[in-house]
Image (cartoon, rainbow, N blue to C red; front, top):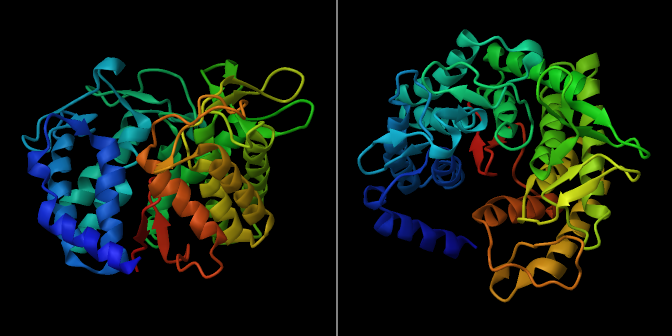
Length: 393
């Protein structure tokens, strides 16, 4: 593997040129995938090639923050620095996109000693809290790019909301648990999620996180993306000052309950693979309105963290069964393909494989089964694309 790493390093050094990127790229996706990957490669290897390329990319991505509010645009040109919002969301910015870039920019600031990277990213959190009331720590997913205020009422721990909550906790962890406001914001959100979003299915009493559309409007829909939450609550427990406190015990209990539900989303499918989302309705706990599977990582991410935190071998057993199902139904000659229907055991995989399958799904499955895993959760924090970054000491 090391020979492959150094060959990849040489390619990055000799061929990777961000100035040649055409058009605009997603600010969020480029930050968590490319920027985060380069920073992680530096933390793991110590090779300055990766840090130099990370700083080059970070400087280009930083221009996305050049807006009247300081909230970054959804797209940015890596060559010209021109930024804009996505056309489809009518001038709004997305909670997860603006609130899931802080680990990366703070890491670059730490390594270079240049504070502007961290300041731009951290300012996003300050703007959100200064310009909005956030009852119960639950944040609507749309914000006005012009005012910085919420422009809707929909709250979800699924698509467009998910990793925002994760990063409130992880930014605090990254800073060696010294920046209290991040943990306070996270704790309020963790409480609100349990109080408002956590529901129970019938007849099996599975705990799940619903979407909230304001008032009494609850949508009993749970994305596969939401299966990051068991790991988040487990990490919240693991990093608690007092693991015997009422909140810490609650967090571990919630982590285990949600983890079991996410496992059932796999176990009950004919292929042993979970659908894109489920609805908790009907007479058998949940149904699958959309049956496709995109090789998503969130469940195995949480299995890895629960295994690290509890040492319970059941999480490795579940992970092995998921991997066996992926190997059986998604494997193709040169990789793995998404599935169109998790109920159909006779289908061929799609001719598509998202990069997060390599960066996240396979990585977490490998780390879950490795008894000598070198990634200690007291020394490293994973960004939302599964790139481990060193905790500031």
